[in-house]
Length: 164
Image 1 (tube, rainbow, N blue to C red):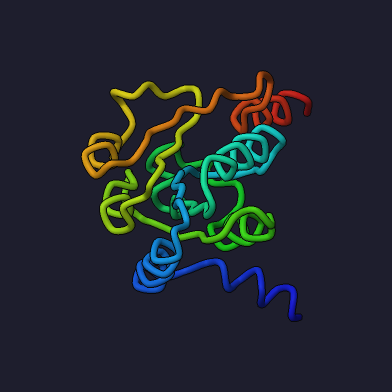
Image 2 (image 1 turned 90 degrees about the horizontal axis):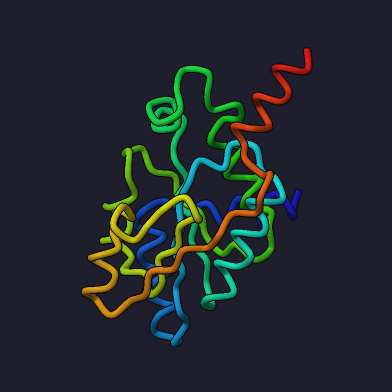
């Protein structure tokens, strides 16, 4: 029971996250932010998130809510609900905080926490990273981490569906 409580404590509400991030920054921690659906966690996700964490001291994940995943990916998604997805992510020791957001983009979160480093995956270019201009205008960095070939949630789902 204590372990589950420890994991759940990483899943924060907006006001909690703001306070935590301010404390981290007061202690000179570099805050890294990334976001995504993280529907079925696989090696590609773990590799990406671990590399994101290595760019700073604290890693914050903006997790798309169930309704935003559905809008972005279609009616058949998400496979796992937001609570399950957030608990799996929070169980990874190198993730420091998770916040679930309902908007289509994490722009509000980025402006709320002023991350030092904004990270996105290899399918993005600087021009289409939401919040990149804001982060850079406030002295932060924007990093793109390449995907691990062969690891994609959509590919896994298609492979599973086609194997029946």
